[in-house]
Length: 220
Image 1 (tube, rainbow, N blue to C red):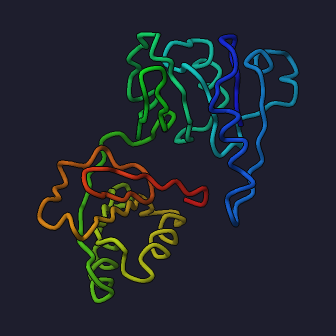
Image 2: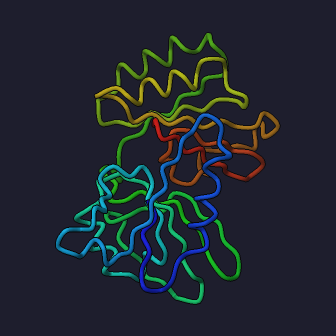
């Protein structure tokens, strides 16, 4: 769902809307609502409860938007936010929203944001999975973790067969579902260090020659 405010419509709205028909196997239900619609008595049928991704503009400086999201958007939801670089922006507390990835130019910046993340500082266990023979150790490690702990899996790119499917299955469990898979280009070799990674908060992340590519899956 895209939500517009009084600073005009974001250019990224049309871009994302046009992407839908070009993604095989994915059906995108795109809907636009004005910010004023959410403040009306009947809400004009607009609801964020079922939205997988909300598209916004200038979230950091829009107090009305933040207030509306606080009451209308589920915690841990994803937001694609376009920020105009002409505005200085504001630093919002991480408890309100956390930026997972950014890309920009001299005019605008596009952020992938997790809204009101439930767990900011969670104990994390990292484990390396180089081949299918490591699956048994991986399964045992996950089973021994407390339910709230995160499991960070490091694997070569491409990943061992079946690893992504296993991660997707575990993330759907009621407990021990804080699983994150980071795949590393084999050419990186010994140049890869965990300290080089930003805060990993998505299901799949690819680390390739100092570039970080985030994969967002609606089913995750």
